[in-house]
Length: 489
Image 1 (cartoon, rainbow, N blue to C red):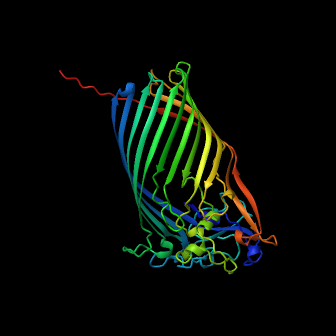
Image 2: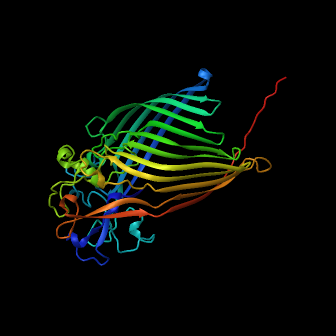
Image 3: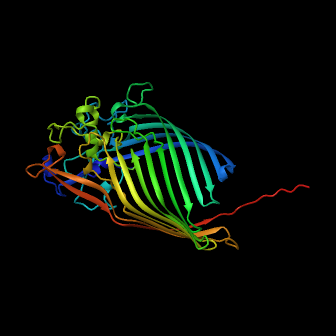
């Protein structure tokens, strides 16, 4: 449960809106409402493999053939807080099909108007969840009106994935050269539905065209090839290449309620392996470069989605997805998407690349004592391609990806005595400061703020960044093995 995110980050001003009298507690505020969701997920999976060993071609070979099967069924229910009595007999509570902002009023949602001039602390009633609508702005909202939960959206997905794969692991020259060749065939079937109950009411039990039912199938061959050569008994060099497909969740949608395509990946890695101090210290130093299409971690901004899904192309078929009028009642020349009511925020056509250097090692100085460390330095995180309707892909950036990451874990496992089976340890993690997002502020010729880039002659960019992150944790585990022996005579 939480506040609706779209309105929570958009500051409004009673002065510029010309709708309110002067306020005793400041003029700036945010308008938002409470939301919650429930998710039910069932998963079943199996993995099986056959291993064949031989000594063909003067090499030790392990040929592995496998089949992986996974099925997942997920049901999600999303609810909005609304004034009591706002929900119709069919379950709808938003006007349809013309759902622009001025048409979604305090009568449709339990909007609360939160003044920014007052402290944000636990003692402030409007910041706490309750079933009474509150407002800090005099003359705004349904202050004092009771509220209730209303079903806003339902989603269903069933994902079946079957993977047939084989791998050939070989050793040559008495173990100095290790090779790996593999091929994986993934076959993914997805059935999914999404209903905007807030607009179209409850599912009537028959196909009324509002359930956005989708059935798609994806299949792909993914090769893997790699090799490791030990120059001597301490140092080795290696290289790998692999492709992959990520099974979609089945619930991620575009603004048009279409199924988001699966993430496709291709990566190379090469570096140095080491095994030092009679096996006490081992690890690797590697360079990697990974390219992804339809990157699941790629967040589409409002500006991107407005460019990919313009009103002139999709507005006639999906009018409820667009904000047709400004708050003063004037029409938008290019109506933007109405983000709080969209089916999803996934776009299409993105291709990203991450490049870096990574060090991993394990040090076992004493029996039972292990020190495990890793460090990652990011050389590049960049956007290679975007949707063809985005004319300026160079203006967009990847956020939330730190330049430095490091982790160090020490653990000790008691191997005998009264404490046998007990493991104690501690971890320290570090993540460098990261840019989280960018805000583009638009101004017209008179230096007045405007809402859309098409109305602007000047743009200011402001970044939101998080500082360095340090995480310390400690852990204790205990395990005991039991053995039962049967004797017969």
